[in-house]
Image 1 (cartoon, rainbow, N blue to C red):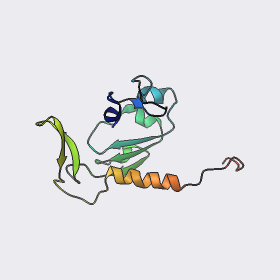
Image 2: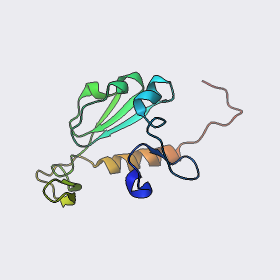
Image 3: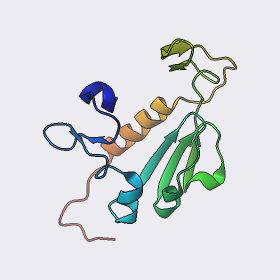
Image 4: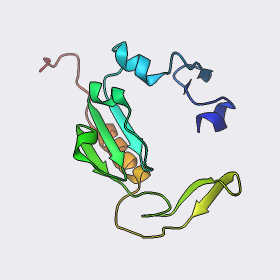
Length: 134
């Protein structure tokens, strides 16, 4: 999505008025080491090695191959092209291609889990300044 919106490679930020591509500033390993990260949602619906920095911060992992040691909270999600339909890179066509589920399951998609998490966060009441800190 970052490449589509900006024409730049990943590690682009959208927190300011204009998109900014800055590989150093948006390097997660550097951010974790510098204490700039409070928590992480690790999304890996396709198999990928767990980054070493993930153990250094509180984390929630949305993964197709769920292992309890991946993060503080692990949520199993469907793998695109296997458990549910999805759009994946097709080496033969050198393009993004729709893939139907080859072995459909009832696992939720990562997008649906993120949607539910977002709804729950939006529904939460922010603490007021007059409330004592816990």
